[in-house]
Image 1 (tube, one colour):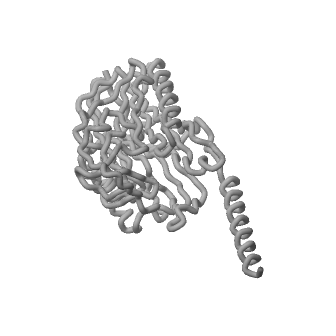
Image 2 (cartoon, rainbow, N blue to C red):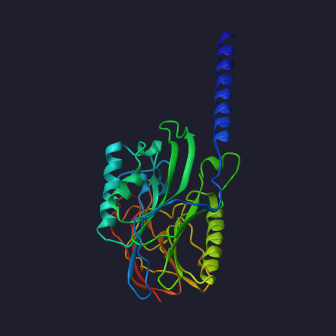
Image 3 (tube, one colour):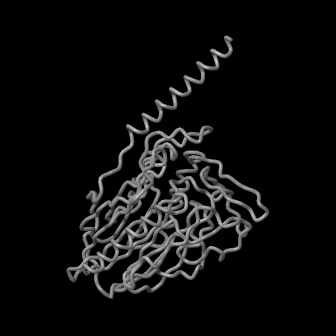
Length: 361
């Protein structure tokens, strides 16, 4: 009888802990206001000119965790023989490795000397990256660039997985330009706001940067990172629809527009393109290009290299699942000069960068 009372007491204690934790999450939860004006760190004052060649690079640095041997606990994959593999880690394996990966990503970007850069998954104060301010690390190496930073992830302390808590997240989208940025706006995206799921889809957003052109018009650069693990891709589709509508409105207002980043959807018909021993993962969905009007198109890198790997197993060429989910959408008044996916063998991130040269017509 005593044992039963002890077991009951333990059960009630666990219930109280779970209820208390849910109350903590619920009271901590909030969405950042929509159409929020972002402070710009203005270090460059030059305007953009028509007919002049410019370059832009996008890269998801994976909060500094994803060296080529890193696996992430939310990633799940199935081998051709039916074996199921789950990723392991919920945060960077060490502070030193996190710093090495961020510095490696910075050096890789600098080697291309781009005029504009889109960074995604840049942590500023997160448990998963040992509270390293990665935004400051990057900006320090690009002192002559203007910068805008919009929060894309923020959460209370997430006590999962149980063997290694993911913790709190503060992360976002960093945009750099060696030209003047007039204004930057953080626009919220639709997310799953269910009773529990809202705590894990974080606070997806895009950052819209307005840069002046010498003829009085604007180049609008939109830094994107859409949802990754929403079941069936429902919210990614809603986000794509919102983005497509925004692009069209910006173009009709007379702007030149580039949206780029991590779309978390296959943008280059690469589902069966790269050799692999894995089946198509559950998180891979095709970008529905029919949502884009005839005024927009993807800069096609011809699948010269993948931009994302499955993080359920360490990277191994010919074995790991590979796809193209990072890139650029351009308005038709912008001409592509050169575009390619940077083959870096996923040394510092689970993403490879994408590089684009263009002119404004």
